[in-house]
Amino acid sequence: MQEPTKSQPEALNITKKMTTGEVTEKYPATKAVFSKYFGKSCFDCPAFGTEDINLACMMHNTDVEMFVNELIEAARKGN
Image 1 (tube, rainbow, N blue to C red):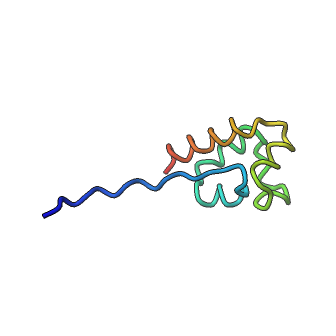
Image 2: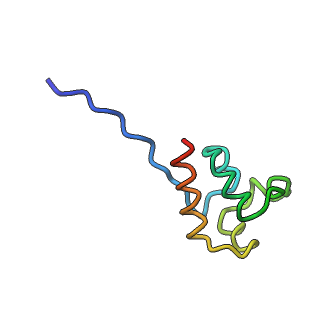
């Protein structure tokens, strides 16, 4: 008889091609990273939710790889 296995935690899949809305909806803890780099008013921007992470980082002169890594770390801690 086989031992029951513990379920694996959900893999975090945050990429620069995902929209800002997708990320914050799936991983609410990432909102702190958006605020840190883009300001608290970023959530009031009409583009927020529809633009992808890469475009948002370009618009805010932020290194996208570093930003995505921080999003993943925040999601891990918050979920």
